[in-house]
Image 1 (cartoon, rainbow, N blue to C red):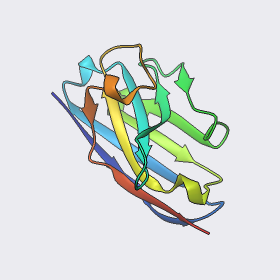
Image 2: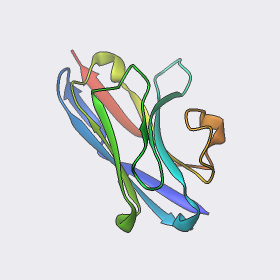
Image 3: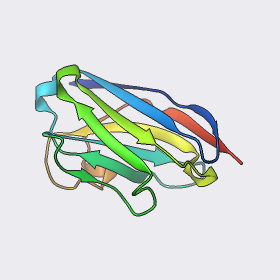
Amino acid sequence: QVQLVESGGGLVQAGGSLRLSCAASGRTDSINVMGWFRQAPGKEREFVAAISRSGISTYYPDSVKDRFTISRDNAKNSVYLQMNSLKVEDTAVYYCAAKKAAYGITWSGGYDYWGQGTQVTVSS
């Protein structure tokens, strides 16, 4: 089993920045891809970013590309999400996720482990 704990959420004004962190513990050697998803009230969970085991490959939807950056530190079993130029529509609960397989990166159903989520609120 793998446990994921997010931190770094909060309230920020539009145009501001936040950095989310996610620390993994347990059977971290089984983790391949790590990712971030978000879910706003009344909406489905949405893919935000993912990073390969090596950290070389990263993936983003168009909605956050060029504003968000995902990174990971395997020595610390951690993944990070740097969010810049935040918009009101980025408001959501952000979840860290990890998967054992290398495929199906944007599909939430393919992830094996999830954190509890951290709230990000962007005010206008």
